[in-house]
Length: 308
Ligand SMILES: Nc1ncnc2c1ncn2[C@@H]1O[C@H](COP(=O)(O)OP(=O)(O)OP(=O)(O)O)[C@@H](O)[C@H]1O
Image 1 (cartoon, protein in one colour):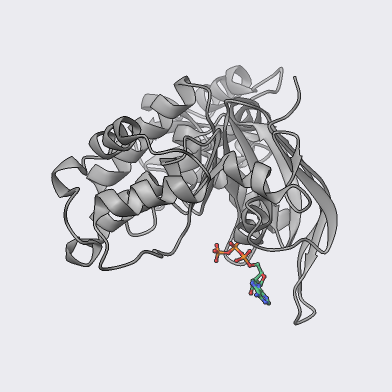
Image 2 (cartoon, protein in one colour):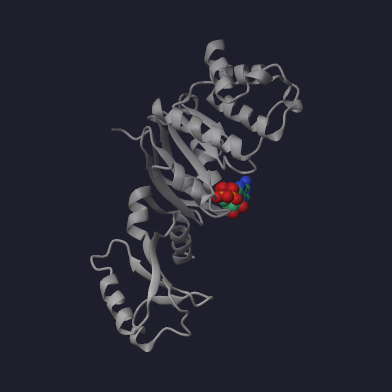
């Protein structure tokens, strides 16, 4: 199947001479939730601004549903809804007019039933006649999402959707994202919040200093790079790790009550059986044990460190 977005050898150098993107290649599949992760200044907003036709690329091309975002701007843009980081709305307009007008900007004929559905889905219906200036920050944010959905886009970009958002809005937003995906809409979000990518995304791209250093299925990424830990709660505290266990990747917790053993989640031999035998030989008893898997956060931190 043709990718819904195809980014080919995309570079961006700003007028200041700063190179924000370096030869990015990326294909987004229709109907997936793709999370673009990266530290501050990595180039996330630049990349999505180019795809949305707001910033011009220096080199390379982007196709959105087959339309070149520069040469065929209108057709490409009509496919895309963008929820930007910053609120850009006319403060004195009503919610209803803002969202309806936005639909018209994309050349779509009026469709009050669609606007009504969007406003209801975002719990904005009771505010439809309110002027934006009278709304809370969270409500304004909901309006931004409603605007982005007004023209029934096939691709939805959410730039840092959780920044400054309360729990309720975040929950509504993710429910909405899942419902949209179920109708075939492709969703691309940028985030610093790794838990968000971990919870929501099908695939993850990591961008660092303008380079896309990794694109991977979330589950595969966590499997491949994930490490597991076995934590043993000791019967009696240990002063130090005995010499007989020196060769093992073991750490003693600060309270000396726990031994933590780190092993490769994909490895054929975890080494746990041998470790437990050695512990027995050394006379170390434990009362409980548990295993845990490293989070996406651990993986991300080590990836970015590798490319520092
Ligand atoms: N108009 C501009 N002129 C010059 N440099 C810019 C411009 N816009 C962005 N940059 C620089 O490009 C780099 C990438 O910025 P960008 O906003 O794409 O990063 P980001 O990953 O979205 O960061 P954040 O997470 O902080 O939003 C930054 O170093 C930024 O200072």
